[in-house]
Amino acid sequence: LVFDGDPRGALAEARVAMEIAARGFLPGEDGPWIEGQRQALREIRLRACERTVEAELARGRPDIAETEARLLLALDPLREASYRLLMRAVAAGGNPAQAAAIYAVCCRELQERAGMTPSIETERVFREIAGRG
Image: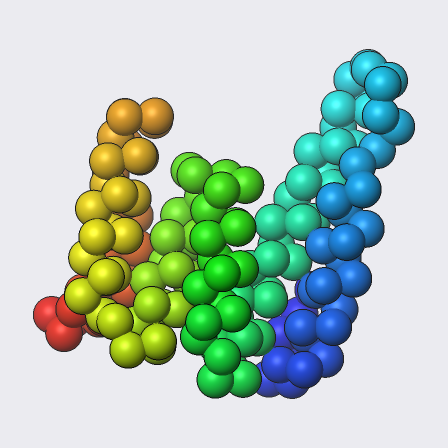
């Protein structure tokens, strides 16, 4: 999925990809190949959801972008791109102070679940929103 500056087209493609990927793959069946396909579909769904957030932000619809970013975060709480997109969405919606709370959750989740700290890119987005970048 490529954004290419056309938010409407990207949004349509991303929503279709999300719908297809959310259907799952061979429910009730197991096996390494099947699990690999499920993981591939999950990644497609996550990337498509990222594109919807980006497209909604580009279209000037931060409320919808925030909703989509929260879905993305629920799907994968260790995906830093989700936190970055959510921080951008709340800031675009006129609440940059909420980005600090989101960043704090990001720091806590990464530390507790993976023993890690946020990446330089996540820190940069937070500082940019907070006016310290």
